Image 1 (tube, rainbow, N blue to C red):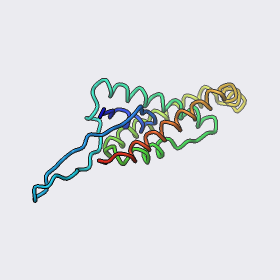
Image 2 (cartoon, one colour; image 1 turned 135 degrees about the vertical axis):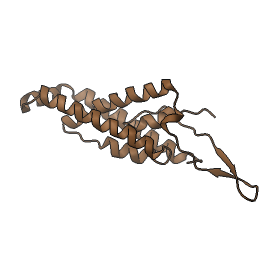
Image 3 (tube, rainbow, N blue to C red; image 1 turned 30 degrees about the horizontal axis):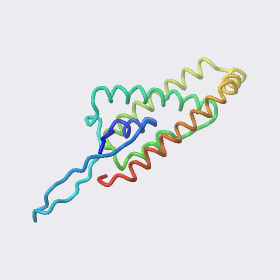
Image 4 (cartoon, rainbow, N blue to C red; image 1 turned 120 degrees about the horizontal axis):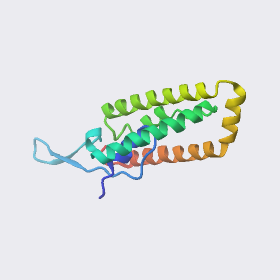
Length: 158
């Protein structure tokens, strides 16, 4: 079984993240000596330095995409939906940290967009010009959220 922990956490930021997930089983022994399964959730410390770098880059990409979509009138509720998708298999502390950074980045990108496109005509021009790309963002983000949800739902150890 191949472990792909970075995909799960990356999904939260947005989203998306995910190329696949399989979690290792954690075995424990009960007082009677019987083996039993123990719930396993992934945390940021489960990621290698390289995977953490990928997580933060994807988080930034998701924040940019989500802010542009929202600026153009398409609110995806990416943070909430990703939290719901991966919370069964990701530690709450990791979700809070990644989510907080995502929200902060998204807010900053929305401020930048609002500053660069202050009037409705400029905003409309930007959004209409990017319509095909925005549609692609929605498709990709939806796929990543669905994939993350499916993987966490299928996890036998979470």
